Structures are given as C-alpha cells and as structure tokens.
Length: 102
Image (cartoon, rainbow, N blue to C red; front, side, top):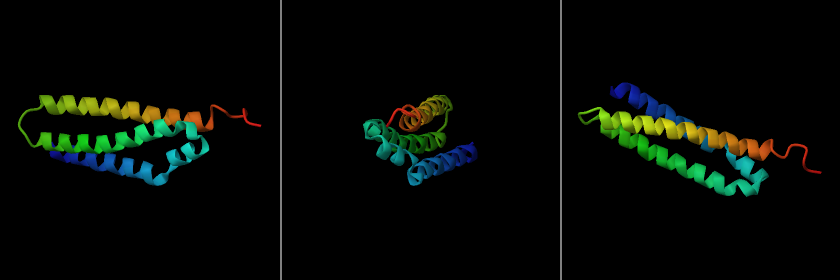
C-alpha cells in the first residue's frame, strides 16, 4: 500500500518542483501582469498540495481505508482542476491576445 502512495508523492513533488523551476508561469505573468493574482493562487496551491500529500501518507500508516480513499479522491480532483487552471493561465497569457497587439 505505502509503495504506490510513496511513489505518487515522489512524482507529484517532482512535478511541482519542475513547474516552479521551469518558470513558464513566471514568464506568462511577466508577459501579462494582469495574471499575477491567478499565478499567486496557483503557486499557493503547490504548497497546499505538498501538505495534503504528506497528510495522506501519514493517513496510510493508520488502519482504515475510507478517509484515505476520500482524501486521495479529493486531492486527485483538485490536482486536475489545478492543472486546468494553469493551462488556462498560459492560454490567457499567450493565445487570447494573439494578433491583438499592435
């Protein structure tokens, strides 16, 4: 049980770190400062996802599956929404105004 959850945690942390180090969202905000609030909210979610993942790993060490399952399902849903919001931010920065400047 712990093996797949530990592996998922490792991959999630790598993904979040990659996004932060890559700086693509930072570049989008530099291009379109109006997106800064959305960016800050998304970046804050990274910290929250790390904490929630740590809590799930701790939960897995306790007996019982219901709260672990519910927590994982909620995390998965929120991660999918988060990724969509990041994609929407990039779309807003680079595609919404295509051809509209100048």
